Structure formats: structure tokens, C-alpha cells
Image (cartoon, rainbow, N blue to C red; front, side, top):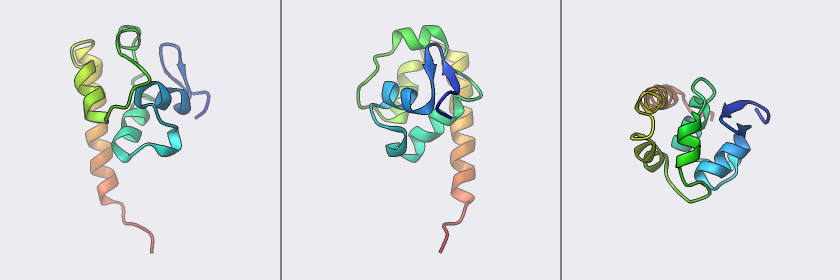
Length: 96
């Protein structure tokens, strides 16, 4: 995961989580982790990468809202995968 291609000039979950959410990958909340994991299937396009302000504290919803106008098709796909991941995560039982 440290070398996975997640978008234009973005390699690895640590680099992506620091660029988008300004936190290390181990400190992501569930919503933010779903956004990053969705980027394994749909890497961040160049126009989104170049037009978002990186290194600021944003939530997953704020990030998705800010990228909606930059690339609507990519944003729709990421939102769909995030919703699917969150629905799946809610069905997993916590270990005792």
C-alpha cells in the first residue's frame, strides 16, 4: 500500500492521506479511509490533483464537495464506492 498508485503524482496511502486530509494514514477516520481506499480503483485525475488545496484539515465530505465541480464523473464514482464501503463496514461486528 505504500507504493500503490492513487492518482497523478500520488503514490501510497500515507502520501495521499497527508496531501488530502493532512493526517497520517494511521490517523484517518472511517470516512477518510473509505475515500483513500476508493482511490485504489479510481485514482485521482490530474485536474483534481492540480486544483485542490492540499495539506489542510478537511473532512471526507468537504473533500468530496470541493472536487465535485472539478471532475463530476470521478467524484460520482468515488462517492458510490465510499457509500458502499460504509454500508459494508456497518455490517461488520466488532470483536469481543
